[in-house]
Length: 338
Image (tube, rainbow, N blue to C red; front, side, top):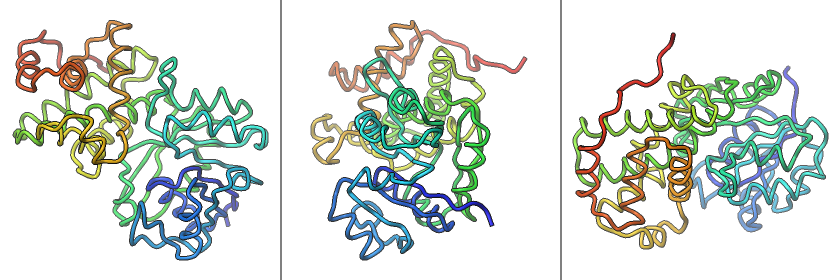
């Protein structure tokens, strides 16, 4: 029998809940931390998270709590599934309560505005004693909960960490691949949110498959061009955390970012859309950061510039599309295997 671990999953949203349940089903002791005490009580009493995954039966061994320090007590592995704007605060609060050499895995697909820091960098600064990994891929939580076949990527420089996470999450419908390119995997997860907004906008306009195909492949080119400037391996973007995640997010109405774009394409403004969704999709915040970084590093990113103009400079969609079609014609494939 494989080693039984004590695990804390921090963040009781849809993805945090579903990965916590996979590990509980694999006979590990799992604490799920969330801020809402009533939701924690519901999970412990009824074994369901009705706010995020209604109808999805949770393992009775999965324990929920709103006490952060109690959740991590005695744990040898922690998964961070909180929003990007909360990651540093949560990491700082729990750092002194964690053992040396503990495994901490980020599942958050976002970027911290101050210094354009990825979540792995935030965790390294706040929990210096940890071995850190990043989990990312085409992982729509509701499909995972429905037992649809899914795969993801665990990225780390530490081989033992990757093997451990692969064992924890492996099931008949969920498979975990490994990578050493932490920044590439993490950037793929964060950047694709911006392009999902573009895809949703295009869908609302009734564009054909030729257009969608062009947008997705040019999005992939922009993502990888930017990521290489930040030190990532361009080949990472041919995998699950790159093109795989891009396809899933750009094609699915389950994605909040796609829904933002779709509503924009129907003529609504961003304030209306955020009010209806009840929260800002990560891609909206990432767009601003990406636009500024692209300008600072002189990286050619016409789709990012176009979307920014639509959302923040009140340019019409038709005007932006016209500009894109007559912009500089860059190469199709920029990176090649030597």
